[in-house]
Image (cartoon, rainbow, N blue to C red; front, side, top):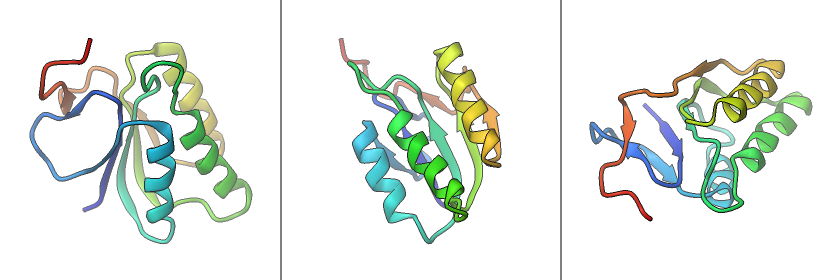
Length: 117
């Protein structure tokens, strides 16, 4: 099972195997490595520290679908604590046919180490 997490601070608290990107540039690169492979779960946070957000990653997904070759993703789980950002992400990705679930507050993701200040 292939699990990808794009989040600047959180990880899977149960220690499940996942590929993790901590910023949007790394998220885009990570998706690029999975372009021709299935991603079973793609977990997305909206705010990625400072001025960085998930939008460059969303744009890659949108462009692929627009070009007729969407990524093969079993589920996109939006676990952002930013309700308006999460809603906009979900709307954009659903528009292109991606399977999206809102997962804010999911016990699966959390701070395994002390959060950065």
